[in-house]
Image (cartoon, rainbow, N blue to C red):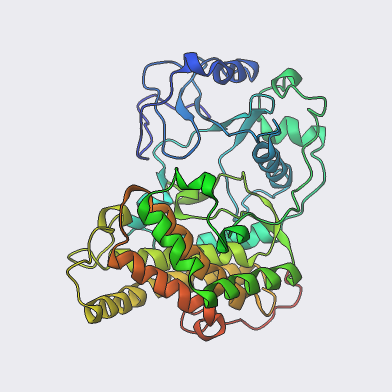
Length: 416
């Protein structure tokens, strides 16, 4: 698909790393037959990985990103993403699970290219603007359910690689620069890294230098609470005995992209076989996190969490409770719409909803730790979010109905 250069994306953009410092980017694009990036108009989006978005000399709009390699030189994130592409190649046309087209990957350089979706908005922007409505939430539920029912072959056959990964561009096998260029890695079956169970006992000294005082304080909220620590260990044990499916394992609003009226799910570097409750809980947790922070805006409407973390110092405990309850009432219908979409495509196992509530509780802690990076102290807003997370972790069964995650009647022939 060729687009005009004035169809610029609506995502928040940044100045990208100079291509002189990343020659592997244009090298991959040229191997794919797309031509190098045109310097004018080249931009980047947020995220922990270097990335570039723009038009190539061949007139194609492309998004390219790199991922970090492991200390031993391996590329587990690239391998997991390629395992997803192998499975996604088998999705039928019109599948509820849509993702930006994968054009090609250089595994040796840990760089991947995708079709850019002009005019797209990230899910986090859509949510903060109040536009992540029931319809989009239901679409997200259908997409995640389809993911959890996905067939995961051990390798990608040559035909799939030619027709799906590169569309009309012939594959230059040197672009992947690996003896297994015509196969994809098997799906990862290792345990997901979060929550980091070792950190529940003690914060690694090697990590202290990279953490703000507020982040350390947030971790202390977890470590000093013996009930929360026990609940997290219990959640891990339940996960180990739960049915496993293909799962995203890093689900957040900003992993969704809205292009026109179509929802896409992206960023598959943590893709693996895991408890599907992780993804369901993460989506629920995103809305609860949004509720906990947005209610401290003057109007109580959607606003960026990073803009409100300093608010709440002048609120009484009762005001925090009342506004928090109001925020939950506003956002619970979004959770219900997601769950309705999910259960319309897949029948969950009987305990999935309860485990998902537990993972939603952890998600609140994880998100408040992440947003505390730029702050010296935890605000009352952050502590309120931690309180919600604690409640969910300690009594997940008691929140299933409140969050409208009640189990539907089983449907004959529904995939599990």
